[in-house]
Amino acid sequence: MPAPCWSRLPGRRRRRGPLRAFFLRIRNKRGHQVAAVAVARKLAMLIWHMLTKQED
Image 1 (cartoon, helix red, strand yellow):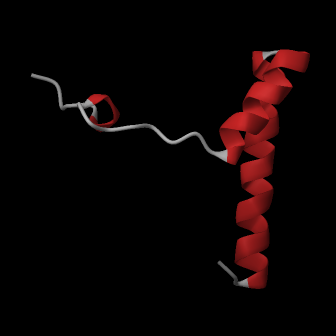
Image 2: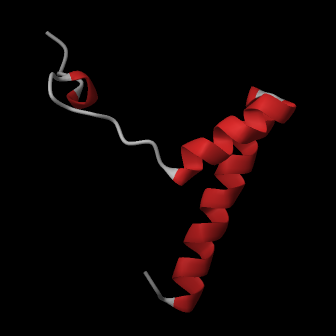
C-alpha cells in the first residue's frame, strides 16, 4: 500500500504561493519549460542570497 498523499486528505487545502503565481504567469507567456527554468533560477538566487548574507 503506498503512503498517503497528505495534500489530498479531506479537510486539507493546498496553499497557492507567489512562486506558483510566477510559474503560471511565465507559463502562459512562454511555455512550460521556460517557466520551470525561471522558477528554478529564482529559487537558486533566493537560496544563494540567503546563504551569502546569512539571513532568513
